[in-house]
Image 1 (cartoon, rainbow, N blue to C red):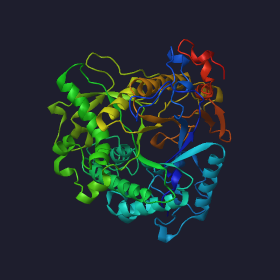
Image 2 (image 1 turned 45 degrees about the vertical axis):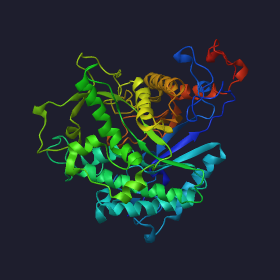
Image 3 (image 1 turned 120 degrees about the vertical axis):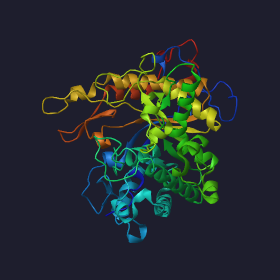
Image 4 (image 1 turned 30 degrees about the vertical axis):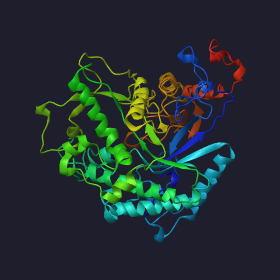
Length: 508
């Protein structure tokens, strides 16, 4: 019986602020444009010093995925059977968990005292089960008031200690996976969606749009509360979006180029456009029709400009292929069919988008160019807003023995993750320093191996290997060593950083 799992109910993003004494070589072309010291000669010479001096780097975790202690104190169940730390009975008036509040005060204080600036996500999918039972959670507009009440409580408690806030993590995943295909909690979809998924009721092609509508209105209310919060002055707030990048299925083909644009409208624009224009993309309104809810004038006004930065989670890219008529059934609506495309990993010429090592999790292709492309798209489409990359990482399944145990040696030997990070950091560098995209921070998912939702503990994303069979001991992986070295080499003497000297040869 519980309410929101307080800040770490979503990601607790540990933003390690690494200051570099490197100096810029003149002003940017506009107030928004980042200023980068120099350009690396090669990809493997890149390190912290080549980014703007105020650029933030860090790692991310999520409370449900790492905290444990599910039976301690008076936590309440969420729909992921996790235990929420703050409102044990769903609402503030039903009581607040003092133990939960103290836990997070202690954690945030410890981070701040050690030079680590925390960013907090208010909602990371684990809604209290008591609110699911009471009125259906985000299926009901009643959630909007309760969400604002929860957010106001958090701002009042922690607004003086936390400057960067995310209202909702990955609304597309929550709405689509939870209410259209049933692969994540609460597991709702229509029976015709997937024979391998046993859904717990639902209406695909309808509920996902209603849930998104309530998510967006809840976000707008929380942002209004944040901007009215005295303790929060000087802080910033946004949503963490999670779009794929879409390369045209057939190069230089007008029809397929349009499919790629439509794919982005349905995946990113669905949640991004309302926070900029106050309404859904015209493409979606035309295709989805009456199944897409409408904002009231008041809701629309609250949504416009309801972010200080764009949160971006990026992992992979796809080819969007136009759906043929034989694959459409208007009597069986669902989100992907509405978009009029199917996702593929190979294009019409049978070329794969990126590479996927043998031990990578399903659909975990490495395509770093997609990061630069989606960042450039946001710059061009939405007026170069401030962007924070809240998640970027690589999931693999290390070799296990016959009993399913992963030895530390295998678990820490992760060259593919190191390669993934190296490639994506270089793509990020190009976006920031060449394309002049207004990115202010980058955070690796994840600090350590954790519970990966329906994938359980088999898939690992951490920079630290967690030995689940030996007292949860933690061991730094090769990828963690790479990221540590990447950051430590960012403390440079600016006199030694010149265009003709590779960064790897500068002195620390």
